[in-house]
Amino acid sequence: MEAPLWTAAEAAAATGGTAIGDWSVTGLSIDTRSLEAGELFVALKDVRDGHDFVAQALEKGAGAALVSHHPEGVAQDAPLLIVTDVVGALEDLGRAARARSNAKVVGITGSVGKTSTKEMLRTVLQRQGRTHAAEKSFNNHWGVPITLAQMPQDTEFAVVEIGMSNPGEIAPLTTLATPDVALITTVAAAHMAAFKNIEGIATEKASIFSALKPGGVAIYNNDLETTPILAAAAKDSGGTPVTFGKTPGSDYRLEQLSLSANATVMKANAKGQEVLFKLSQPAPHFALNALGVLAVVDALGADIGLAASDLAHWAPPAGRGNKEVIQLDSAEAAMSIELIDDAFNANPVSLAAALEVLAASVPVNGVGKIGKGRRIAILGDMLELGPDEIAIHQGFSTHPAIAELNLIHCAGPRMQHLWQALPPEKRGEYAETADALVARAHQLLDAGDVVLVKGSKGSYVSRIASAIRKLGR
Figure 1 (cartoon, rainbow, N blue to C red):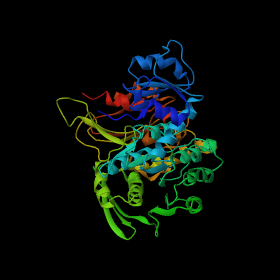
Figure 2: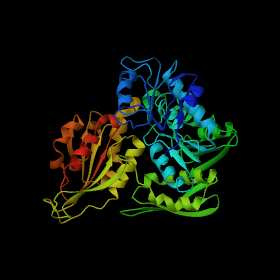
Figure 3: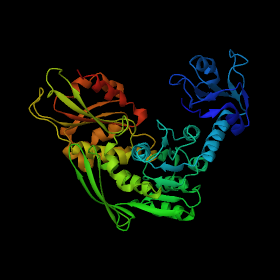
Figure 4: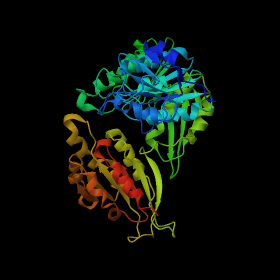
């Protein structure tokens, strides 16, 4: 039988709330659609007030509900934890979970690669000890305390993703997590609408070092223009600074990378020790993150050699560069296309990396109506880039990878500027919205093609990826 995550008495003590009933819960949920029996339903207020769904949560088998008042339509003896403020109580649970556990906690932030790096760490650490990490990209003011509050007491390694969209968000979340090891994957022009310049973003990212546990380790990318900002914050933290990158003198230096159709193989110098490792997909943009993972493993005192081997078991999360073969004819395997679904999000760094992956892909000739496989990109807007967004989009027309592509289809008012700047022979279709291209997905592709779908979440190009997937037989 699964041990309870929280009992009524423990949760009440952690939050200062009042527990109704003698209950226990095995997890937390903020959504009745995904809630599982035995979980604590947290009645947060967002577009809708979570209190309106407490009765439904209890009917679905929730072990209890965290609320700020007794909701209408809920029995007086229903299992509840009544607190003054639900968000504050959620933070209290996260803080208490961190305090009662002997787990070594890793905090991860960065403009690109937080979730992928979290999943890499989960993959390698769970083979060396009891490992906890959020199943989703839970990295905001709700997600971080939920991740911590979900942590079983016997956890040995915990991985906490910490994100931001505005200044001042990372430090308080880091204070909750008090990481033993903190990692900054990179600093790039993402969320520029909320910052004056990239130095401001670097300063915000660097605040993850501000609440390191005494004796902690601050790991950061050594290849950036803003590396001096990260280095200064690492030094000020009182922790041990550790660098990774391609730059000479990095503690963990990437020395060699080779790309094939199905793998990325790397050689690195890890504090004087040669390490070979690979990823089981052509993903050069994940190489430095993988190296950062090895630096984290080493800092935790875990086995870096075993981790280097186990990185091959990792695959990108859905929508973050996954490769899929879509078979168009059930009777003929060769009648297929390869889909690179990278539609979860986009910024200049991740778009450049995705275009390089597409440029290195190998289409198949001799099949389909055209008979010549093509490299095709379907691109949606990159959002939150600030006042330079038009120039940034337009500038990709001269990216070296574009020369290797056959067609680029674009959706959205920002991507229109890239589309207009492309050489005419590479200019595919343009539409104001992703939905306008969804209906034409079957006409944009042919057997033998490799197609990349990439854009910010708010551009909805994920709908195009779904439409391509539905072409399969």
